[in-house]
Length: 304
Image (tube, rainbow, N blue to C red; front, side, top):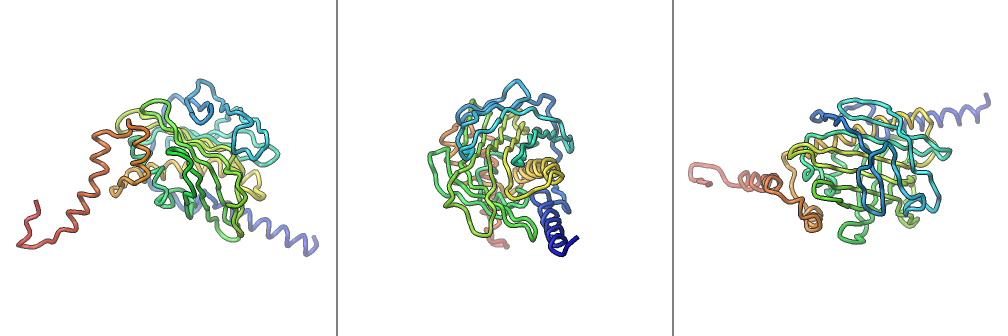
């Protein structure tokens, strides 16, 4: 083996090991309430910007839909069962020659849909719970439910940061159902030096309220993280990323400092069914605690 070949092999292996920690948190675990799986596992049929639960085990989406970078993809997938851990069923789709990373995760989270929706739209705090996410920026608003955003993921050295430049859409088929979808923004001006722009062909998080305290969540991702990624690492990402993402979302929704944001209030104006008495109490509680803690204490204090 020549010196150049040895260098290429060593560097390539180091990059692969670094990427191994991307989205996975291989050396740490997420502490969160245990999620329970729902027996039925319907998938999502995507039509336009609205997503609904279908009756088959396929994801159906027009091949010429926006956000596929002008290329035609066969996005009707047969999902293969991969793992069932901590109440989260994970499936993988067939990888193509371009190294697409398709996965699907289905679970029931112990949190009300409204709390999970608040967690999703509170982009400033998303790095607190989303694995390896360093920063999120909302770049522009296209409508009251559609926006352009950028996510930057920070893998360990020597791997470069990954950018997700996306158009996000929030839709609801009926009360008790809320869906977040994202596709490529297809805007090279959003790319940044020193970062690899990932190919987010299609991402979907569909929520269905089961009760006041439980929500069925389905997470689907089709895309490529950019750069060269070996098959064994793709397989690891398919198992680790969706699990840590869903458990992190559940843990965030259960935090005592959860409070409403301007973005959530705007979504509630679009989908009025998101407001209910229980959620109002949850959102008002932090404000009451802050007022109480800010009150002076002492013999002369008589805080009501």
